[in-house]
Image 1 (spheres, rainbow, N blue to C red):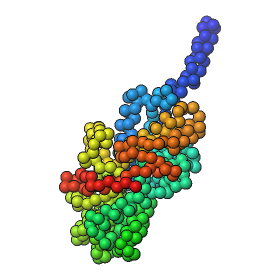
Image 2: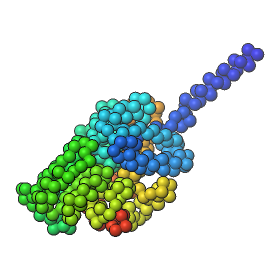
Image 3: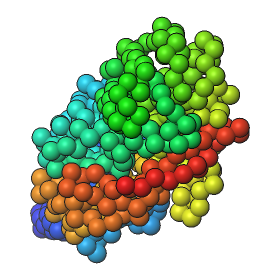
Image 4: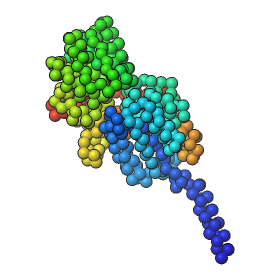
Amino acid sequence: MKKQKSLLILISFIFIALLSLSPAMAQNIKIGFNIPLTGDIPKVGEESKFAGEMLLAEINGQGGLDVGGTKYKLEFIYEDNESKAESAVTAALKLIERDQVLAIVGPNSSKQAVPAGQVCNDNRTPMISPWSTNPDTTKDRPWVFRAAFLDPFQGPVAADFAIKTFKAEKAAVLYALANDYSKNLAEIFQADFNSKKGDGAVVAFESYGDKDQDFSAQLTKIISSNPDFIFLPNNYNEVALIVKQAHDLGWKGPFMGADAWGNSELMTLCGDDCKGHYFSTHYAAAGAKGATKEFIDKYNKLYGYQPADVAALTWDAINVVLAGIQNAGKITGDLRKDRKNIREGIAAIEEVKGITGNMKFDAEGDPIKCAVVVKINDAGEFEFTESVCP
């Protein structure tokens, strides 16, 4: 009896030892998501999560991710940042310390991505923001990357398009003062438009506070300044309110928007008021071809609506992380070492063929890629108008 018990114990020890020698059997590759599942822009979080779940099912359905000849199952952990800067910091720390993820996708909005990026950089954990366009997200942060173009590129794209399409000589701007993305892009646009049309060409530069719902005072000033168009670098939920209120006050001119317009919920909230207007963004769903169309069709079939740019950018951002993991060549099981290897693996990427465009990364971890200008057509679709490349 004692011999049998001793034999069982010996077999158990051998089995445990074998498991420890097989990383593929012992652990999954854990990737965290710092996304807004609640708060002001929950649709952004939903689309990021849906894109993640779609890719997770695809890769795990093929047996996992091949890293140096070994296949690892992926595990995605979603943390809600509530669309708040302080919650994004908390979410990042939870994913890094409690969940011990190898890398983090998100936050999306610059308001959350800038402070969370500092946390990830300080804790030497690779992070990639799918949607943030503020330069501060990655500036002097070697552990932080992004899948989106930057506002210093996007601002002039908007200005040039308005000058060409609207024959604009005067512009007005309304932006969210507490939103890093909105404020930074508004200032970049103002400087660029004034440089092209002369000092004072931006005839009104108005802001509003966090949680404001009534923009009539700012819009009255803007309309009285008689601009040729209004630039709105704002989140889609605020855009719907602003555009409707402007029309109620008698504004009949064009609006030019930025990439935060590009959400599947915009037309539900804005309806006919947003039709005929333009915004710069990362891809055009209407008329998409190839891998982009395949992504859109699959997403639509699974979730019942057309994915906005944040879903497509999340797909690309995850693939950047996965390419970095494969570039690392192996998973050692040492968390610090693996995070460092993945960061170096992402930095070493020569090019990623994404569904929002091909990406090469510069020294700051920013992609060199094109922007798209879309028109909201009469069917409420985001229709390709032109592509602008660096």
